[in-house]
Image (cartoon, rainbow, N blue to C red; front, side, top):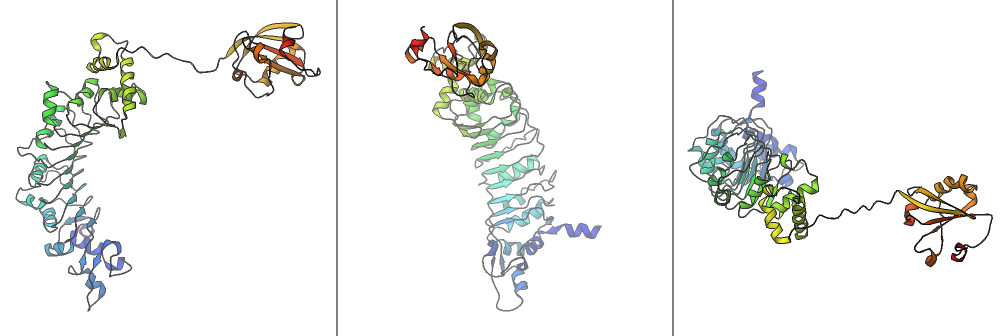
Length: 447
């Protein structure tokens, strides 16, 4: 059992040597798979290619799920990784910051580091070791359960850090840092347990240059400030994008407060309890109308035409609300468009029934006819009345108002629906036996 565990837990150097063994490539020399191999004039080609002084790894090095628990020989790490810029060590068994720092300290050009899914819960990073992260600009710590103390130690030692990923770390609170990280532009902290705005607001002073804040799946209950306009402007002066998908916002006031972020341009607000009662179109229209400065909502650009339609819809939506419940935005839009009347409801569906005069020979009878039926079905309905078989009669439609001008129109096609003739109450249908070969004209109608 112990031997199998030892085999499963390997060093960084071992994994690199195995993964980039030249036997895995069709050619030992050249640039296949992004690997640069320097050949030796003597000795075994395979041995030469595995030697640290013969192998330079690709600039983007992916070693996820390889069972890595230790660094291995520092000199070999340094030789192997001279050109590495991005390193993915996710889903390994690294649980010692000392081993991680050994790897990082020997990659001089490291820009991106992914440590997700490594068991780092409760393991603190010594400030003296963290200095090796000084070149890292993008750091991924998803589902590592790292403490806030470790996060702050890292951000203090990474003066060029721009992107930080802290998802799935079970945070329900945010520990404040006495030293801000002004370089950070993107913070993704989704799928945690942050519910109080008092915790979220701490990110403002900690990351004063923050432009993108991703808070989805945190069940945040509100955006609450005593003086929201002044406070939010100061807290997040550079925020351009915020993702609140699947949060717990239940009030329109919270949406309206997003307007106080002075540079906000893009918002994601899907899956909110507040929006559940509305249709998709209503949700988008009401939200667009509440956020006049936002140019991208839920990933879609808001056009000027859409904004105007949304703002007019917003006014009409609140027409019947009591005055004391009307949102501030309603009064702003009324001053822009005026008090709009409700839109007229126009039913464009075809009429279902009509009262028509049916005339055959010298007889006339008023019938209520279903207009969704076809000409063929009408002939069957009239068989008993006019005493003619369906295939032995011709039908002519006469519009009451236009009959004298246009004359009768023969209803030739058995599959045509009656409503397609635009039939109105009081119009006529003339039934003529097919056995009588004659032309129907407007003069015969007056007889």
